[in-house]
Image 1: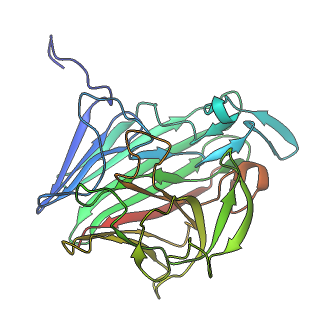
Image 2: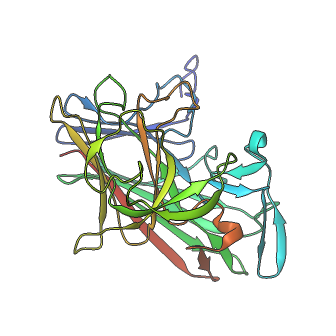
Image 3: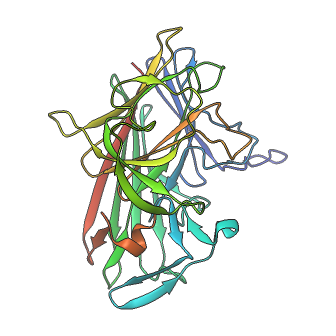
Amino acid sequence: MSAGTALAPSGEQFELVAGDQRLVVVEVGAGLRTYAAGDRELLDGYARDAMCASGRGQLLLPWPNRIEDGTYEFDGRTHRLPLTEPSAHNAIHGLVRWAAWTATEREAHRIVMRHRLNPQPGYPFALDLAVAYELSDRGLGVRTTATNVGAAAAPYGCGAHPYLRLGSDGVDPLVLHVPARAVAISNARGLPERTEAVDGTELDFREPRAIGATVLDNAFTELERDADGVARARVEDPRSGDSVALWVDETYSYLMVFTGDPLPDVARRSLAIEPMTCPPNAFRSGESLFRLDPGKSVTTAWGIDPF
């Protein structure tokens, strides 16, 4: 950085290009700032001189979503995390969103970002984290690997927070397809109280239909998958015919779908479809939570198909 050049709030910027696709990954949190295919901006991102808000494009590690009261038990010990959602008395979206990551591999169409998550109050475990972003003729692929480099087993979950955007008229006219048979119903603190079948409810998007006035802030599960084990959620603009899909491999059991209503900067103008390996509050419930023994790794994959 030369004298007189201000550092971007999101740190160093890494641009990837493949054909007419362009992607910007940032140093802070190793998140996605922008992604475009041709003249279509597919993410509701943010400017280079702005700080990330509302979780846009961020990685959610070592847990996605919320932990009630910031406390959980693991292997007989109680841990207490900082309450990063103080209004609801929760810990939210992990520990790495504002950490500096390092680019260790870089090509025109691909980058690998790495971060050492050191033991700290509330999460006294050590993880080496790596996320690989790659553009190809199939769109964007994201592979996240966590390796336990500590001496004790660690709880782990993985998520990401992209906001998909089509056109400029908000989410109401968009047609949504979510291939999920069940959905978590949460309380006012965003914590799941029960899981229900979507059949016969306003949350059934197994057949594509317009979002309309539906307010979405729900973790969908029991995902219907293709023969290759991949589940795909899709958003389409029926006026232009443009569409974008978010896919997840079998390590992701949940898709959080969020119309952003409580957040003025994204409210109903874009749709977050958040891949999550576990549901909200998994550090307390244990549901779909990875147990990483010392020396063990887990790799998860998701992506965005703009074609």
